[in-house]
Image (tube, helix red, strand yellow):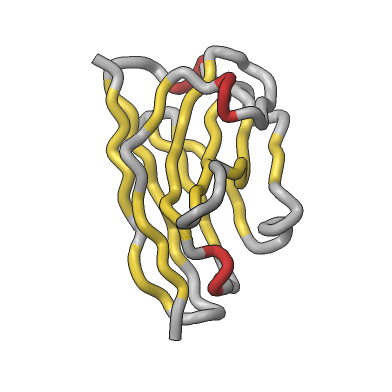
Length: 124
C-alpha cells in the first residue's frame, strides 16, 4: 500500500523557516519524480517544486524561487522542502506527490500518489 507521511508544517512568522518532510512507504521513491504542491483557501493547487528521479532536474515556481530547496534522501525514502524567508502568501496546505514519470513534471494531473497534506501558516 502506497502511503506518504508528511510533517513539518506549522505556524511561523514572516521571514521564518520551515522544513517539510514526506516519508514514503509501499514503494521506492528513487524511481519517481517527486513534487511539492500547495493549495491556499479558494485557490487551485499550485506546483511549488519538483525533482526528477535522478535528481538532475529541478523546478521551482517563480513565487518561491530563491527561498525554497527541494531534496531527497533515497536511503530514507523521504523528500524534503526547505522553505526560508516565508511570506504570508505562502500560507497553504502543502502536499507531496510522486509521479511515475522520471523527468521533472509540473502538472498535478501527472502525479499518481499524494500525501494527505500539511498546513503551513505564515502570520505575525
